[in-house]
Length: 482
Image 1 (tube, rainbow, N blue to C red):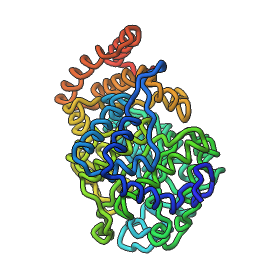
Image 2 (cartoon, one colour):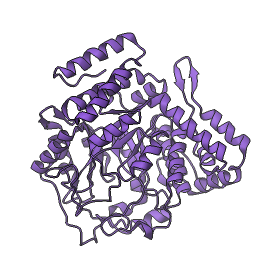
Image 3 (spheres, rainbow, N blue to C red):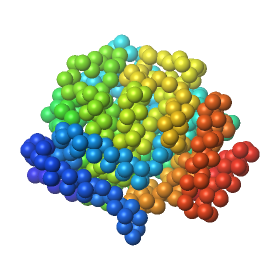
Image 4 (tube, helix red, strand yellow):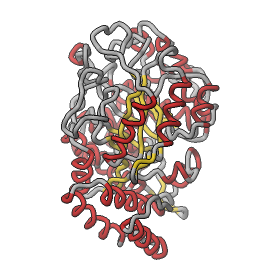
């Protein structure tokens, strides 16, 4: 029985409710009057507290996703852009993944780290190797990492993850510093989530892979991850453990995308209903080729146009949630979805264990990669590309470090107040990148962008202070924030 307030996975992700929502969407996908009402409901509204959005239920959003009327689809794309501009402006947050270990006891059929794969070399970084990887990432200009590791209680216990986090935060190299560590590791206990919280992590990220229970159990035939309920209920344990910011995601291509879409939004509704705050981020990875994984073996792949529509509909349904797209996607695909709701992207990424230290920007190891990287440009190239498109690449971590997380972040975001600090913070962290890491061409583009964007800060006092901070950054000082 569907119950978004339940703590049982099969009740807040109720199969019958998903199927009923998809049937409703199919019946109404050409109902122009209803679709226009849904779009109107979701549109940003001016209130006494600022700009606000109502969002959509999973059922309403499913109707939009099913709709194939060209002019209404175009309206969806425009609305997604309007919502993104209202709450995130033209800022794009930058991050990079750091793979710590590919030891894993699970047998996930879509991942090359699965236990039965004997062709892939197994590797686990020592603390000295973690240090060298972090220095390499700092030398690129990164300030925010997402650490990844396979599930292996012997090789990758929570103590190892905690030690790596401590090492990462401890490294100061030249002007480099990792200011936020997000964690993407297997579902664990409340006690372990408390330990991660105490270690000062940013967001805890866990992809569901698929919400379809029968498919989930077939795709995870053995290992701890086989337990659908334990995995699906992980975010509740994380929040019970004190972690304010959690990140959801499905691996599109494993199951029918409309099913995953509806269930993903049901999970977001569940977190809001139980904890008073929805997901901090939603990721939208697609299945990619890897060591012994052929994505063509799966018959639920989606094309770029469908992918773009999914991104737009998620942005409309959960307007305040950050959206992440990784280097799984090509430059062309990332270009399209940036306008439709994406607020975070990775740059210069390596998906192999020990993939950064000792390698040039155009050189990358492939023997321990989790998946093929489609966008292989350097961070400097991605930063310049974003600026050429009119975006501000942001390395900001201020909200996390100022305690603006969880419901505190969402309350600011929902009233648009987050813009008063995010815009200048983005410009200041971009200035740091330009001073310390950028190529001459990137620096020239960036300096012009900063000058133009400073004048757009509406508050005169904030604008004046931001200019002072940026001048101080030019003089060698670092880490200013609003």
